[in-house]
Length: 226
Image (cartoon, rainbow, N blue to C red; front, top):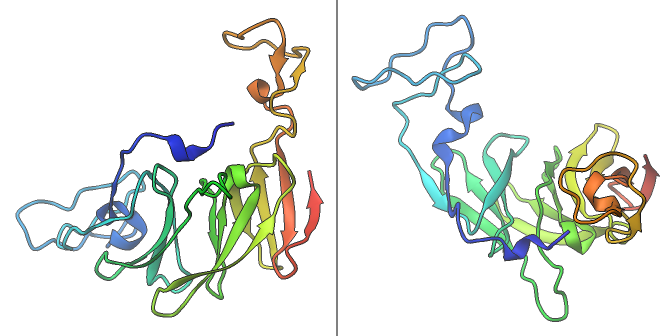
């Protein structure tokens, strides 16, 4: 699995107008509030509507914004960029302005440093960000004013490639890993592949070793795995 830092430079601007959770003005079955314009409020697939009266806002957050999650109080959105320039941004919902960011720069001494898709925010403002090829989950704090601060990291197993993240109410972090443990080890094919490169299928091609790891958020220790 290649590092996402070499992806093309595109998707550079994040249009906050599409964040439906913060732009809706009517629940299903309710009459939408009339926007102060001649245009009707545009409907979305959920049955709710976007408030066309709210000003559109955008914030340059780097390269390839791939995921975003809201803070517990709904005041900020955390954005993960996984392209050429990789950063975590805190964007204020009220006006769509970026207030803080932390860069994840690959260096000669740390070439795997970067981000991947997974994001989760706890009720106390702790932010968890998957780091993919670095085999780690970055842990940051989100202050009341939206400031992000990198605090520590949770180490995953070698070649786990942490991808998706989720939290429960008991203090555990669930990590969906884009394994395999031996990504280039050739094994006999156990199921048909689409256009296999050769007669030996790789574990990566059919996802044999994908896993979900569970971590204690306080200690950072692995508590289980399936």
